[in-house]
Image (spheres, rainbow, N blue to C red):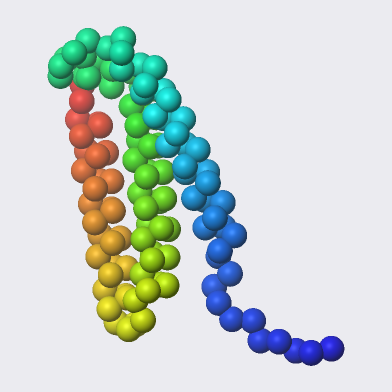
Length: 115
């Protein structure tokens, strides 16, 4: 029997699965909005009325979380595959995480500020 040293983080299958689940969640949200938007009144008041329902607001929250998680995995893998200097890669990871968290925080603030 040969002893092999296995290296790596072994999160490839989990990342693949998360990307698929978040893609399905975002597609379901897109279908929901495609069905709901034609019946909504035009303008800001129509948008506020649509988001006033708890289900649509929660679905939008799940969409934002799915989008950020999906983007994090994709961009993180790009940095890991193509950026070789460890310091630059770490800086790009931190910058990506901050941008995604900032965007998610802003979106959640907007969602919960609607009456």
